[in-house]
Image 1: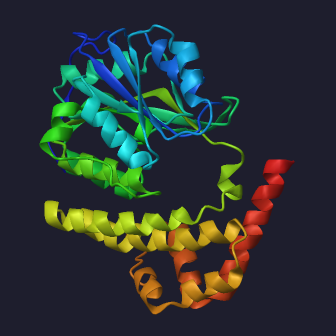
Image 2 (image 1 turned 120 degrees about the vertical axis):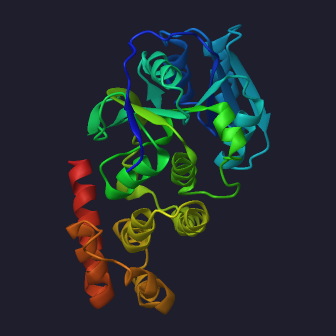
Amino acid sequence: MGKQKQMTRDTKVPLSTPLVSVIIPAYNAESTIIRTVRSILLQNYENIEVIVVDDGSTDNTANELKSISGDNQRVRLVTQNNQGVSVARNRGIQDARGEYIVFLDSDDFLEPEFVSVLVSIISSTDSDIAFCSYRWVDERGKSMRLVVPKNDEGLVKEGESVLLSIFEGSMSIWTGSAIYRKAFLSKNHLQFVPGAKNGQDREFIWKAVLKAKRIVGTERILSNYVIRNNSLVKNKDISKAHTLGCIRRIGKYLRSNTRNERILSIFEKRIVPRDYTALVYFFAIRGFDKRKLLEIARNSGYRSQLKRIRLRYAKLSEYLATRALLLAPRATILLFRVVGRRLRKDLLD
């Protein structure tokens, strides 16, 4: 485990007020952008710039933004042709003037103390990253699930220690639950992968965490991740397959940047096979053609990834699902589809 240091300074009030850049990629976000930007403008921390990167929207996103920002000099609208969320975020990083950077999606929102609390703990501990707990909420803001990482309040840890906790499942950092020192991102050439349509957030976070010398967290719930339109079961976007590309890039990055055998082992023997199993599960519960799913499950290259699973590193549920997909792919896919139908029924009741 990495070196750890307990914070001793008061974290309630920032010791200084450095500029914080909040980067929001937006594509056809007219129905959500107001709540998102308002949650930033209502922060109890004044020195903020909001950079909204409109990624070629065809709706009234820009007009909605103007209606809430008015002449507010803290809000900047950057427009570009549609190039995807990664390019939009990278453009925001490029244009950011702040000492610290926050990433937020155009339908998520922050609690009023998010910036002040995270600036306080990241600056007073001279950390590269600070993070908080967060909640999943529905479109009305009703809480669906709390995500509270098992972290000692204010305890500074090295990046490898935090990444290991993430891989073991005891800690979670989401795109909108962290603040980054911009100089740290620049020094380590950390950006989002252009063209990646799924998994790019996790790829960025895991790479950043690995590179960080100092990370600090708070268990306070300060961020809200919005689950929209029953998306857990209705979204049939095949871009989910991009997750596997992200997994391959992460594996290459880990092998080049760490010698921590436990991190490498958990990644290869839990994360990789789990994500390959999860891909078929994702498509199955959304009603994709079962013959195509069976073809995927029987592919030798796909099966070789599933065979990496080890109960020593994986959760029992992950292990059983992966082994079942290996040994009885047809029956397992059918079971996944039944689960999907039940989820739809539960959500519609």
